[in-house]
Image (tube, rainbow, N blue to C red):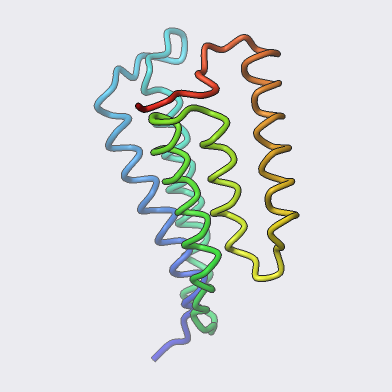
Length: 148
């Protein structure tokens, strides 16, 4: 049996899979032409680029050895959880609580993070997001929304 680099094979397959999913989604939109681009033009181009890059990663992986590395689950789950918390809290409570809570959940990814440092970072990022998006750009984002 020929040696196969399982890590690069998995990475290339993931790129190809994501590219295919987004290409199928882009084909549901109007593509247009290079002169008159539709909403699906750029997503389709980037999907094709992801598929090509995935193939370019898979081809060399078929001729060399390599083991599949299992990533640490704690950081992965913490970051995915922080995105979910942001999406849920943003709708119910507003931007400032959403940013602060998502930073606190993301801090669970690192065992060395301390509570005072996490709270300081959460407050600073919430204030920075408020300054940039609400004050600087003037976007109508609710800073606080009381659900009751």
